[in-house]
Length: 160
Image 1: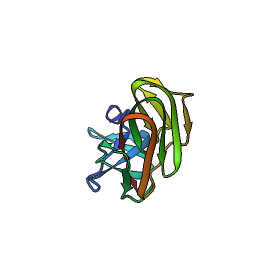
Image 2: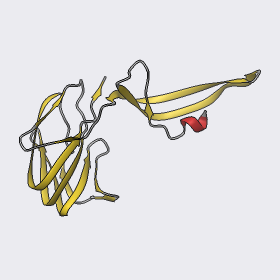
Image 3: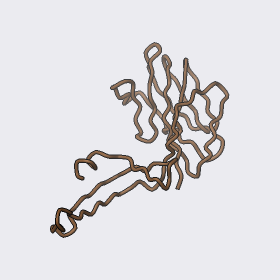
Image 4: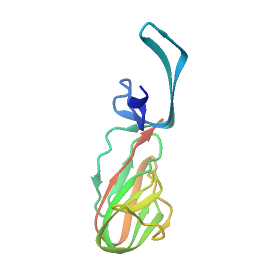
């Protein structure tokens, strides 16, 4: 059981087939140390994040002037994949997030859930400014400046 639970970060339940839960902590212990025949009782304790996340989290391409609609009950911490050159600025609902000094057609990931920006295996520490973008419930205005050839996002939608 311990090997089965080791390293797991997601819990899915048949009661909520369209959602998953993030596991924060796992604890496993034998209930009283004695077995009944060949059966030993264990107590498995899972500490979960307070939200349920949608299973459908496909990457969606944005075009200039598009808005993103969050149809769920909580704000979301999206992940943006941007391919661009030089200095770029992503603006979501009036809040700017800038990345400086991208190489020609460099692809970066802005991960709002983890508060990191990276390209491949390289963190872009010191090259970013501003607040990581959040998507409010309802319609969200998204725009950008700089030389961006493509921009995609994953909503990371969540509910209570």
